[in-house]
Image 1 (cartoon, rainbow, N blue to C red):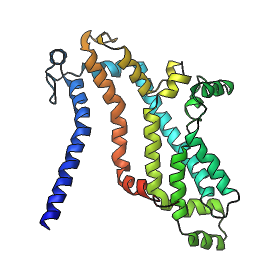
Image 2: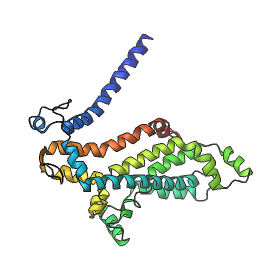
Image 3: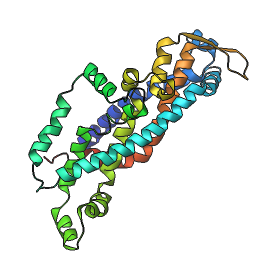
Length: 286
């Protein structure tokens, strides 16, 4: 028992240190965003805000393009997450059925797309030929289905007892009724986990913006942040209706990072209770 307790404490300490390694950089960025300009210039800021200063947040919030990017990214993330879940369900459910004709060949064809890609230039030419460049659809259609996520959901569906489906069919239920009233209610944990995967992937995405979008109205928050981090060294900002105040580039960068990070951190705790069960369920299947 004593050895077991020592082992438990070692595990607790290890994961506590791991948690600190993950949280301290985020905390440091938050502290820098809230500290005074002089303290940042003098490099006095570490893990406690010095000279509370909210000017960086005021300037960012007053920047209409940044606020527009934040709102556009939120709407885009919700829409893409819902569409991706629908596509994943509609793909995984038929492939989970044991008697589907050509199931093996379809599975091989789909899995091949995980390992082989046409590349950046052919993809660009494809989007151009489809007239999707500089449209919101170029951010939605190419990534509306993840094969990896589909395989996870298919493995879960395959683990649902066949007797449930057979009893429903005896009562006259069709495939859509079975999917809606049996499979989906039993799949809340895995669907919540996949929703988190899709939402985080879309929220953090900026490569497709850089490749396919030139209209500022379609810039996401991450691409806006990418632009700021690449161009901002020091700022003397003047926002209409506000007095001119010197704000260091470091505080502006930190504030923009917090704006881009906080929304997804707020969403995570609501899904976390499903995450542990969802991410491991069906792991030993197929």
